[in-house]
Image (cartoon, rainbow, N blue to C red; front, side, top):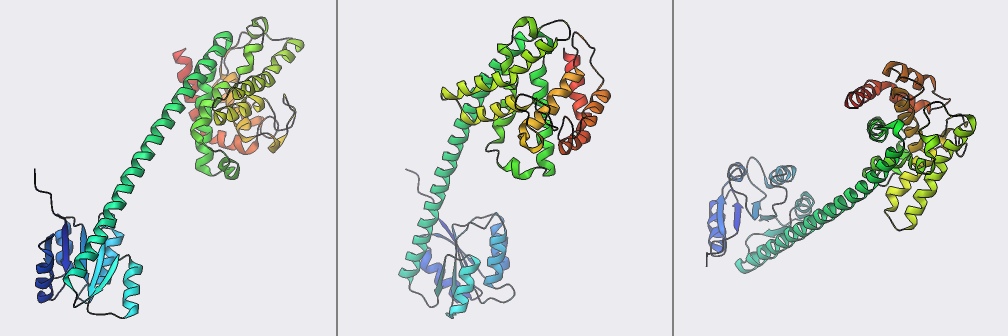
Amino acid sequence: MPEKKRQTIMLVDDNQANLNIGKTMLKGSFEVYALPSAERLFKFLETVTPDLILLDIAMPGMNGFDVMRILKADARYTDIPVIFVTSKSEEMNELEGLELGAVDYVTKPFSAAILLKRIENHLLIQKQKAELKRLNDNLIGMVKEQTSQILGLHSSIISIVADLVEFRDVMTGGHVSRTQKYMELLIGRLVEDGVYSEEVLLWENMDYIIPSTQLHDLGKIFISDAILNKPGKLSAEEFDTMKTHAAKGVEAIRRMAAKGENQLFLQYAEIIAGTHHEKWDGSGYPFGLKGLEIPLLGRLMAIADVYDALTSARPYKEPFSAEKSAGIIIDGSAAHFDPVLVEIFRNIQDEFAVIAQENREDA
């Protein structure tokens, strides 16, 4: 059986006699580096990481407190336990050392048995802390992995449902994927600029929001093919029927939620499906919400949805240019769209144009 590696102690003291005594006491149990100054300590720390440091306070040049401040400020050394060893026993010295992060404080002259026991106790505590950290890191890793798997599963299911909607609505190929990219742009800039930060803080998990946008037109499943794929403009009656897709989408998502699916995914999806046709001035549908009554996700999706409709071909129109489409969005500020979000869109309209162009080329 290989010999168990001994733990390493660095003993720092400017008095050579103290170094000799300390090394004699410890060498039977530990690998000991007896160092006469702070400078020598930092020299050795470049190549050796000890399990514990015994540190004198009263040293010429850099004293123990100075050393401690440097150790705790450096990520490489901050977790190394430090025990102060000094002939001083004043309460203020002890307090200062402990406040700087020392794990213990022993005075000279000291008993070999007591010093060894204190070192053993602190090394045991350090070992237990390391083990707890390892277990915690493993647990966090497992949770992240399971969350990622669940997120991927739900995202896949949502994508399949969204594909079914697009399969029926042959007039809007690629609409779901493009609007998803537009929403990602808008939300990213929103967070970066700190806009509507109080409402953004209410979003429990940002990872669920973007995939949820895929269900914004779920209600179109319930619209007849004759209306959904009519090769021309809809009549007023047909348009009224088409408008019911928002409310029908909400109903469908609520039924999915009742089956025990991921509630957070579906909460976001319901908001987006139900409010992306609302207008800032209150003239939208299905609820006739106005201004800030419209949830932020609905106000964002309104811009993404309309921009994609403008830049896409329809039986009754050719695709508008990115410039013309952006102009329509900007002109709709404070009427159709939230004026604050329109300003965000104005600043990233070129990135919208790139997405529109790339998807037209791929079509």
